[in-house]
Image (cartoon, rainbow, N blue to C red; front, side, top):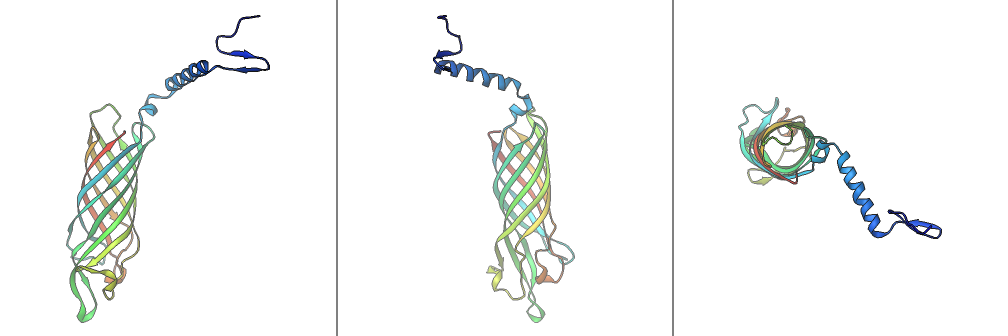
Amino acid sequence: MASQSKWWRLSPGSMVPSGDEMRKQLATLIALGVTLVPAEVAQAQYGFGLIAGVSRTAFTGAGSTDVPWRTSALAGALVEIPTDQILSLRLEAYVSTKGSPQVRTGVGDARRQDALRLVYLQLPVLVQLQTPVGVPLRSRTFFGVSSAVPVSCKVANRGCGGVDHFQLVSYDFGMLFGAEIDFRGLGIGARYEAGMTSVLPAATGGDVRNGMLAFTMRYSWAR
């Protein structure tokens, strides 16, 4: 029987598709797979972006009476991992400055008011809810936790290590929530971070936590 299959080229003891036929079959399988993937999953893509903002920071807690707010800044990057058109995981990494223009340091006769400047590397892990793809102006809300480590600490332009009776805790942990309005990848938003750990126990003798209200701008691509 001299005829050959349309899809397979026969040889003694084997059945191996030709190169052209393999490419045709692969293209058919890919087309079938794309057809079967739900539309919301096919449209969901990883998002990468940059974020920056201006913040107002201060201390909260029983040991932070009459501590004034400080105008600060933050800048970094983020990744968005969608599960569908509405829900996604948002991972951020940014540097933020915190502290206060006036805190009490020292003890006894050496007690005085000094400016405290803290710089943190923050790593928020957030759950994000957003309006579906296809809407030009999308709203986003997010909430989660933020872990941070201090990378710089200065009291009146001196390193904190050289200040007597001053000790900064080596980590910070807080709850973060916020919202954004997004248009074609550009987002304008606001967020608040409430510290859950005391960061200056030795300096004040009381519970002192970081607090931050920030207004941000974000740009994302490959969404």
